[in-house]
Length: 199
Image (cartoon, rainbow, N blue to C red; front, side, top):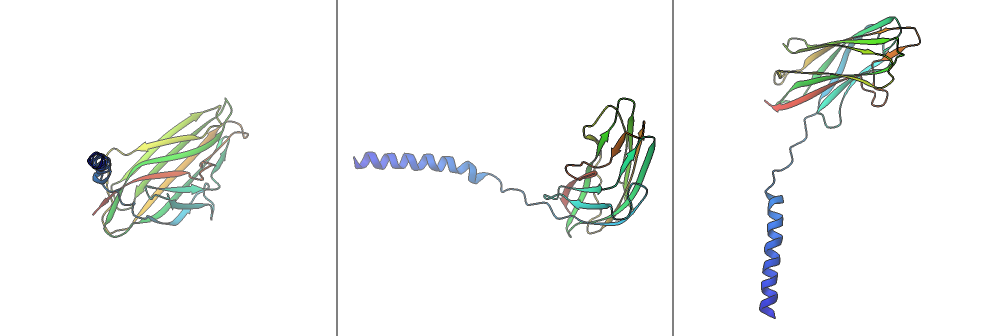
């Protein structure tokens, strides 16, 4: 009886060890992304009156967003805004923008349309992104546009750069139609997705 129990215990211990080894051999989880620090240096244009523009990183620091609280355009009109944001990251890290996403909340009937033009660039860097997208009514669903970056351009190490964003939103149709450059649920207007690497 004792030998049987001893053998069974050895088999059980071996099977437990076998199940634990793969988990122990797995690589440790990746360290959290560094923290992005953002400061709006200025916002100019009809789409961004004073005090209506802000920038903030996501909770996991894999992206940051630019938001407007008064960028609504009504039929047969347009608004624009140019924003400058100081983007700073910790020493020893650099980043590249992988895509730029714009989120518009439209209220368009079947005779109307909206057009969004976006340009973004870093002062002193060859990186830039631009897009022009249109939406025909009728539509009241969130309108999302994406600009993917073909070749990643990483920022200089240990340096802060100024990001410039220029958005123009136009609406064609009667004055009862409108479009607003913001996702009313997430409160994000333009999202910059980020790829990190160590210097």
